[in-house]
Image (cartoon, rainbow, N blue to C red; front, side):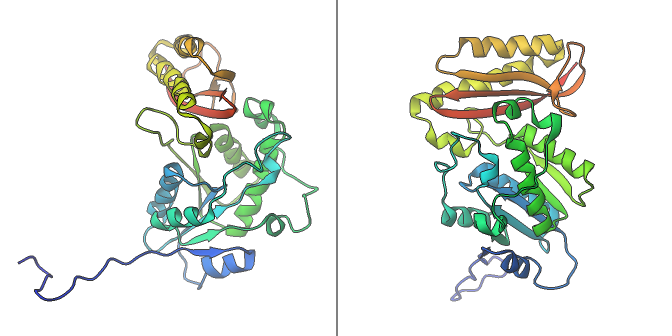
Amino acid sequence: MARGKQPGKAQRAPKVHRAVVTRTVDDFEAAFWPDEQPVDNAVVMTMGALHEGHAALIRAARKQVGRDGRVAVSVFVNPLQFGAGEDLERYPRALDEDVRLAEANGADVVFAPSVDEVYPNGEPQVRLAAGPMGERYEGATRPGHFDGVLTVVAKLLHITDPDFAFFGEKDAQQLAVIRRMVADLDFDVEVVGVPTVREEDGLALSSRNRYLSPEERTRALALSEALFAGRDAAAQGPKAVREAAAAVLDAAEGVDLDYFALIDPHDFTEAPDDFQGEAVLAVAAKVGSTRLIDNVRVIVR
């Protein structure tokens, strides 16, 4: 008989982890720091509509802080990072489902504040500026977007006061400007990037994928296929990377390209033709009415 099992006795059910849901800063602080015991803390910042990509971030956070550490997940659709005509009202909101996913992957606290709780004095008059790094690519298409991102990230870092903050590498430019903010403004936190999670066919997971029709989803695969083609050509240099990816995008139907670039990740400028080392091959496009972004890390020789 297996050790620990006795006939006639029901086996103990596994302990179910429950996340505390908080709506105010005061309630969050009481839940996230219930005592003075010094443990590592981590935060995963999201806008909700959580999927397996977010789950990977939460699991990475839990692994980082260990069993005794604390993991917070924020769920807040930040109006500052949406421009005119963008999908603020359309953005999916499903807090109950988000809480279930967060706690299933190791979150201790979910912080889901209202807009008034985050911005109690109305739209902030003072905001952080992303500078030149935030004016290229995504920033050129969405002016002011990264100013809004950095303003809310800074506020949430002050509120949650974590040792570690986890962000997905899928939003490569966002990750880059957040890392630069933390370095330039001396935030006492370690920013950790987590690799992009993809479907089996290569499509990067995104909350906006739910807007795609079956036909549009098939067309969207051209984005990841182009990136993989460029990555496969990296040993031949930057020009080969661009040409291989461009060949896939040029042949794609139903893909309205916004930008496609091989980028130096340190300052998010276009990598020159003699560039060597790690670069970001990034693409943004509309498929139907849905705007998608994706990128891969490439080692250019």
